[in-house]
Length: 378
Image (cartoon, rainbow, N blue to C red; front, top):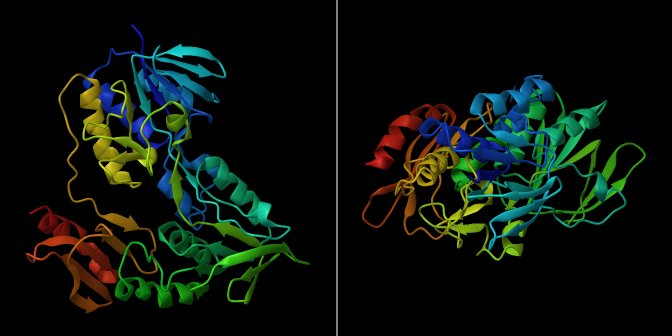
């Protein structure tokens, strides 16, 4: 009997294996990963520095431990070269593997903004444990850090590094922090608390050029201003890894297109996590991934299950001013309403029937996450 093969050892990859093992201890499972296979919490990468967490302390279980615990075959440091759908086989750097079902949990790559300058190759992105290790090493004697991107990850890094006494400059093309997640009256409330930690903001512009300077780097922005920094981090978003799926002839769009059963255009291949586009939506957050993994485990176990997402608020890890968001689609019809203000703001997004469809809680109101989630579920 050929195994279920899972590609990827991130949150999605290990989540589907764990959920499937809760239902079935006998089905053979092989997990293939291009890294060392250690299990760690990726969301911790953007707030680990102020907590003095080194890369080793972020590891939850080693590859050997988790393989034994889950009763799987784990092939670490292995690249998949091709998928032969007609024969249900994979070409890999350790040979050919046959599968019964294939799960693509490939994750996503950092978006790389094209910039000029003789130091553009020195820009760091932090997307996995190896990247975090490189960041820790690169910090060395650095005192100032420039962050390209003022979204969720950029703000989390800004809070984390500023709390560790680094001078942080954030550059973003939008008008305020978290511009793709929250309306301006909520995002702007991050400005002062993070500024008090030592964060400087540059909005409405982008980095055009990164050059080596006598000390550190000189960033030239689109508005002709300049920023001096000892280190440059790019945090402008993630792009689902779809190349392998595209080369395999699967339907792809922004992500690997799957239906309500997490099944791709090939009924023996499934996808979840950052690489998947579930019924038109890419949901690169912890709660949707865990929920989808539970559904997919049932599907792989022979059940007729379909994913139905509950209210899934996103927690932005900015202790200086906490933020909780239940996002709404960009094309959603309705309007934001201010429900309360004080040390923070409480916003609700209401549709034409005055039904709550999303919310934003900041500051002291972040503690109302569960209450608002219940209202949203109703």
